[in-house]
Amino acid sequence: MDILSDIQEKSEQIQSVPYLDSTTFKKDYLKANRPVVIKGMAENWPAKKKWSIDFFYDLESNKPVPLEVGNIFQNESKFLKKDFKQYLNTLKKEELNQEKDKTYLSMFNIFDQFPDLKTDTDFSIFSKYTKLNNTYAWIGPSGTISGLHWDSVNNMLAQLKGKKLVLLASPKFQKEMYISKKFDLGSTFSQVDINNFDEKLFPEFKNVNLIQYTLEPGDVLFIPVGWWHYVKSLDVSISVNNFGYLPKDMLTTNIKELILHRLHARGLYRKNYCTCHTVVDGKRVSKF
Image 1 (tube, rainbow, N blue to C red):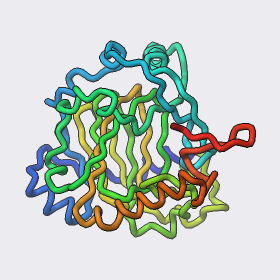
Image 2: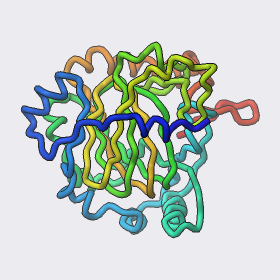
Image 3: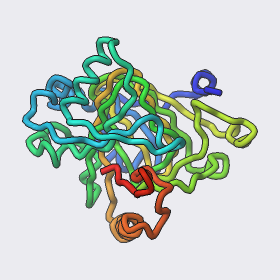
Image 4: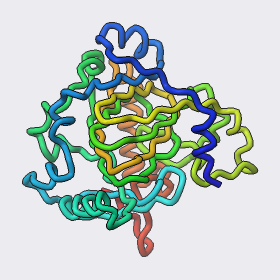
């Protein structure tokens, strides 16, 4: 049973503000572990003004990119590879309602592939307090879903094209989220699939207080570490985010993730129950 509409009907809005300086952001949101939408923060970024499906198509690159198929957080991990421009052509057809392809280019290392674009975004309100920043682009058609999960570090998500619905829930709802053992570096998943909900399996989920916001182009959402979130694209969408590691994270979270990554890559930790591998003809195949 899809309960997304029911959740939206009873959910309050995530707090939004028209502007934040870095000092206020640190005091009232980063240190307080509170989410906030900064309306129009990215409005004047070069990325907001020029990034589009056509813009990326015209860039000099056509390397294969790994694509997720469906909601791999709560469902089976399926992925495929397409040449970058072939995938962009798919999205152009989606915009014209000629094709309904729910493959998703998520966590795309955009600045590794296109280093000249590094100055197109500005997360300095946040990154001035961090020691390590991992920035990714998210490009996909309407209807793509990142199911309920929380990230191990603070995250800023900027919406550049199209709209995205975001649901958030406080870290206090650990028990009610029915934590999954599925491995994904830097994320912890819920077993609860909002779009295919089973109340008999997850009866306590009804006690979770979810808040919502529909991000529009130019909006930036701060998702504090540990906050559960669900994200659904409402249009062909381009987003960019920054996972920021605070100084204390470098001595704890970052080291732990490096160890787990190496163990998992060697098949020594949660070998086949993950978002980055699948088994094909008896062989363990990496998404990348």
